Length: 373
Ligand code: G3I
Figure 1 (cartoon, rainbow, N blue to C red):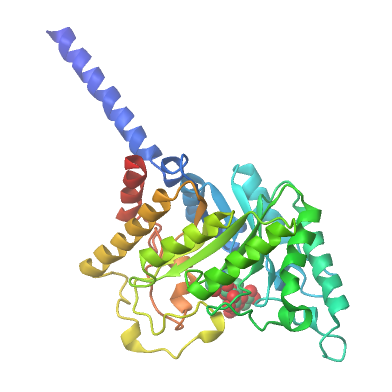
Figure 2 (cartoon, rainbow, N blue to C red; figure 1 turned 180 degrees about the vertical axis):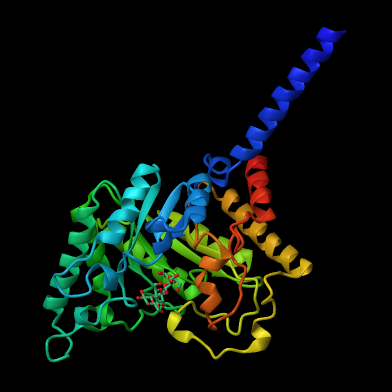
């Protein structure tokens, strides 16, 4: 009898330990490993190892990383010919050390490009030839530095508008739409093994879908490499509909590329407008648009927010044959750019970890969802 009690106690201890380990090891990246990469964006606090709690979460839960800001051209080449690689080097080294699918963001973007890029010494627009030479030099210097280490590049970011027209950026003004395939070709020359993506927001608008699918087909007919469409997902509680987002995933996949959800977060706040993720569109602060500034979401809002995450992830799982990666745009609510957009100084709750680095209940629910599918 005594032996039996000892055996039962030992068995109990073992199963408790196994249970605890299972609990400890339940991570997003493991749960979704069979489906797609789960990524997050790293800021400078992460990259310089100042945010230890954030880093612990990144290592545990994410299998892919992207730099939120430090690889944009104004930071990489602030002065013509003078490259600054310290931050980007550390970011890439972190990806290598932790065996993460590492993404470069972004080579060609109208925003956060240095002023010198488009003008001569008199401040006048440079010629098409000069801009091409500057683009090629920037792209090839950066891509070849990280050859074999960066697995995929957001080559061109946000070049097409919701109605399908081209954004009237300096790139477009000086080079016309050809700046996009040129950028892809130069990136491909510098690292023939890297995946190349076109990345944009609001890519469920039918005008954008049409123009982007046309562009993919044009690239393919001309033998220009394009591997995927990055669908940013700066979404809210009631926009866009899951059906709209699904149609776009299917359209891009049908055009012959993979889809990645590249900048996911779900704002829990009311949106003053639902059109744009353009940082230039900041509106004046309005108190009624910052309703939950004490750090707590009302239960009904939290339930609606969780349902949105589950609906989106159910959609991604439904199309896991098309989706390569789902990347959250930051780790904790405190990290998120949404606290300052479209209105500065709000308290938003868009990410999977709270301001104290605590995992929100949605994480376990997402893990459970992956196990069921
Ligand atoms: O680096 C300067 C720093 O020197 C200065 O002291 C500080 C004071 O404001 O500003 C710092 O720059 C900020 C930068 O983030 C780095 O922290 C800029 O003001 C701020 O505007 C910038 O915002 C970033 C934004 O892109 C810029 O366009 C956000 O963090 C970043 O989340 C956001 O990310 C973009 C994607 O790249 C593309 N898709 C849309 C997405 C959201 O806008």
